[in-house]
Image 1 (cartoon, rainbow, N blue to C red):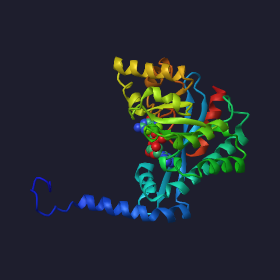
Image 2: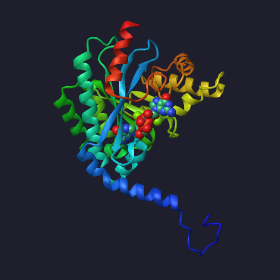
Image 3: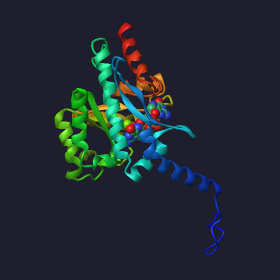
Image 4: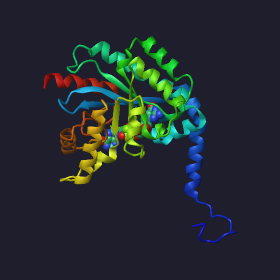
Length: 288
Ligand code: C2E
Ligand code: MG
Ligand code: MG
Ligand code: MG
């Protein structure tokens, strides 16, 4: 609007943009106190094995219970936390809470869940990846909680690792050597060179939701089917397992299972929710 009004004229105020900016600024300045006051909480979304339908673990997804604005999703505040560096202590908090939750599942239900002890997936932002304390913080949290490294999977987005040099990959390699799984999140959105996968210390590909969405129509677009089939066979030949996100219907789950995907996550199984829901679902399998 201001542009079409011509070069030298003052830009028209956009009240909506102002409101957004105030909120953004307000949210940013409120973040540190929010962490201290315990306004963040974590929801867990089950990860389901496509072959037998068993719950294998869950992804931890952070939320902010803001005193004025209610529950805010991570897309509203993670970018702000990244800009201010608060993502490092916030991410550490998420990691510790999630690993504690995994320990509780394993202590209380380890023997009862049919597919073995539940595992936990935690998202890492690029800032955490380049923070020198990552490996030590992770080791300390695992030691403090007594959780085995192979119960933990750290999710890093494909875009964070595109063009990553060895310095950035070193901490991930150390963690992978300890037995922590590294997953490449939102895979297929970052235009990364598939051959590049060999260089990365990842053991899981998380296929982006956009692929799952294209399985919604029946019959699905044959080109999309071929692409997913190709990614899955490449992943398997590199010994990577494939998780699909955003599964909303049984038809999608079936299609993705036929295409060879290993694990699924999505509203069809469960929305992100309180930790009790994950172990209820995991235990429910046992009786089916
Ligand atoms: P993500 O890691 O790709 O997580 C999956 C997102 O898809 C979650 O959104 C989840 O609620 C949503 N989702 C799951 N199943 C379905 C489905 O069937 N349909 C649809 N439409 N959506 C589904 P959410 O919770 O809003 O998280 C968004 C992103 O925020 C995450 O994407 C992740 O990148 C980031 N995030 C979440 N928690 C953390 C955290 O603790 N640290 C960092 N650094 N990032 C986080
Ligand atoms: Mg994720
Ligand atoms: Mg994802
Ligand atoms: Mg995603």
